[in-house]
Amino acid sequence: PLQLAPLDVRVHTAYSLGSAAALGPHAITLLVHVDVLPPFVADYDQILKRYTEGTRTESGLQRLDILQTLPPHTNHFTVVESWLDAVAFQAHQKAGTAQAYREALTPMLGALYDERAYRKLD
Image 1 (tube, rainbow, N blue to C red):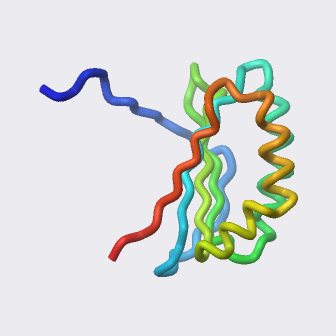
Image 2 (cartoon, one colour):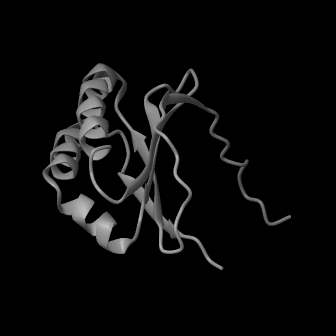
Image 3 (tube, rainbow, N blue to C red):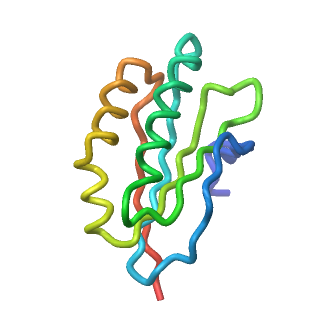
């Protein structure tokens, strides 16, 4: 009775999967929804390759997976990142790779950059 709209279900396929490490007790996991305007999907692919290659070499990264929504919304992506702790996450946010990624992505966005951080609770 409280539902005012249908559930928002997003079915994804693997776009780029990294190796997953067991998350430590202080891990920070990000879920980032990226909605790229359809004419920019090929450009985003190039930006995303540079981002994943650079980010996967950073210390403190425990996981980096990119998921893509199934047709007809293949311009929607979910980026899943897990960092060892808040210090590693903050270092990543200040790194040139992350800053270049966000700067290049901004003019291509079809919706707000939706980044949500989570921490495992005991």
